[in-house]
Amino acid sequence: MTDYTTYVSQLENMIAMDPADGDFPTIIPAIINYAEMRIYRELDLISTITRDTSVVMTAGNQNITLPNTFVVIQGINLLPAGAAPATASRTPLVSVSKEVVYALWGDPTATGTPSMYAMVDQWTAIVGPSPSAAFGVESYGTIRPNPLSATNPTTFLTTYLYDLFLAASMIFVSGWMRNFGAMSSDPQMSSSWEAQYQNLKASANIEELRKKSWSDAWTSFSPTPIAQPSRG
Image (cartoon, rainbow, N blue to C red; front, side, top):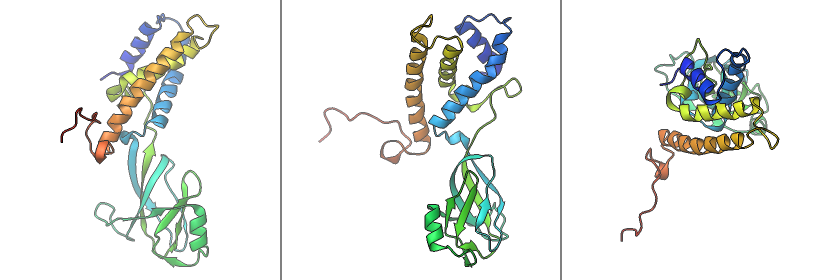
């Protein structure tokens, strides 16, 4: 496990930065932001998935507002009206386009048990048909974890994907040091770290697929090459 202090110290050593340089501490949040945002966008990390059961539908209103902590809504389950979320049965709503909901349930006064939903914007969805009761909503999807900082000294990335996190950081550092092109003092620095990042991301992605049993044959095992010669 690597913490914030160790991370900053390693960055200083890797770029030969004087710890007393006043410019370096001011750029660290930007380095962290670049590395974290890129990894979170490019890898569908299961560690960023969470559930929420705080939303309750309003009878007769097909619009529902979901928590603004979500970045991507992956699914919505319907809970019986008044049921405790911990013990309630769940009915998955089918994700469709807005046009499908409007075509099938264009009259919002027609109520019933919702069977589908469509995202209207980042955190607002419409359901069809409009709910006939105050059904509960269980939504799940990805969030942005709190960034690494002096007050949040460890994250999932620094604990389990530190090599990838450090490589992404060094790509940003290459630009900060202006080692990002043919006229720079080290034009290969950025491309070398980018290549390293891509290699590490590929292996991290395989591990994430294994966590979801999306690996070979829908298992949690690492992909294996076909044996040569194959058994008869």
